[in-house]
Image (cartoon, rainbow, N blue to C red; front, side):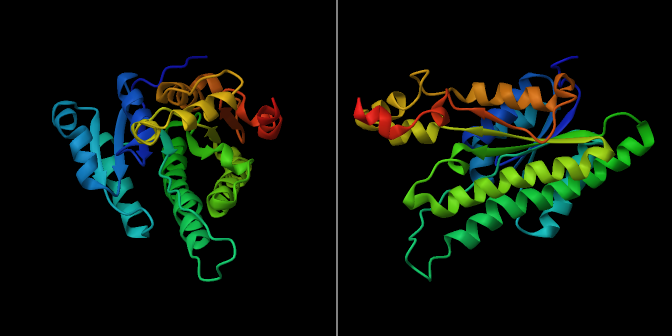
Length: 266
């Protein structure tokens, strides 16, 4: 089986920054046709404007995927550019803090909508197209990879809604894997811990104590590079993972395997 995704067409949401941007750029380097999708058009064009203008295998799409019409337009733009779609990476995520005692706190509604329901709706639309393609060509229909977080399995009082939305995304991954398997579509997820994205670099600047705490609570004693998440996503999207579906692949250096309290005690 091959790890290659060269020549395949991928949609990557949340591709204006962070892990989504890293995944989309990695896919381009690996020879895939990639649609970079994000609602932040300004940042999307700042990051990819020159490259998108020169590269035949890059397209940019700006729009709010919480709206059904935007999803339809994204799929249409992808088909117009590349005639098919083989891979969907749902990397669009939002993080909000939650006041657990405030009945007027809307973070749960917002994050379930953004992090879970939007990924489900985009997956449904893309899956229908994948099935149509497979009916014509035969063989495997496609691969969907959801980008999740170890927050689904860890608790923090300020991140209640974010943790719930990630846990819901993980279960959606498993359920859709079973539902779409008869159609030849694999659905998996990559859950990561701390990744040295531009935003984390900014957060850690002049905060050595925060950096030390992350490293101390990670058995491999370092912070992941964005490329390490991208490699895991490529594996799940490639034919090498042809018999892998419904799995949550954790890229966290072992962080979810230990008890933070035990580390602090030492």
